[in-house]
Amino acid sequence: MHFEMDTRFAYLEWLRQEARFLQMELGCGDKGEFSPIGTFTHRYHIPFGESWRDQPQPSTRAETVLRAVGVKFPRGLLVPEDAA
Image 1: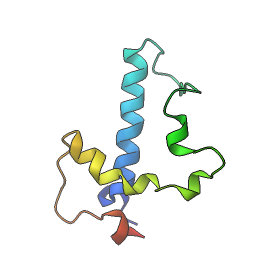
Image 2: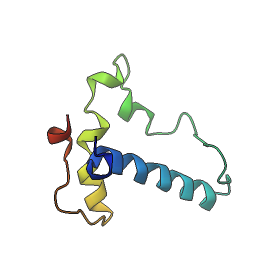
Image 3: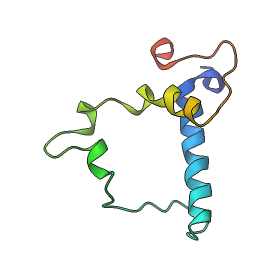
């Protein structure tokens, strides 16, 4: 497996770093993982009466989000459809 060229793993790495930096920005420290519960975004991933598995999976947003924040994509990248 060449995870370094897989968009899903790149997205996971980016999300972890983004969360870490946001924790520091908010004064929550950078050790461990701080995760607020009950914000207005909760129902995005788990609509009432449904499973998160019934929703579009995170990997379907990976390329869109990474491009939106300006990540440069290398040649030969595996997009989620190709990597499965």
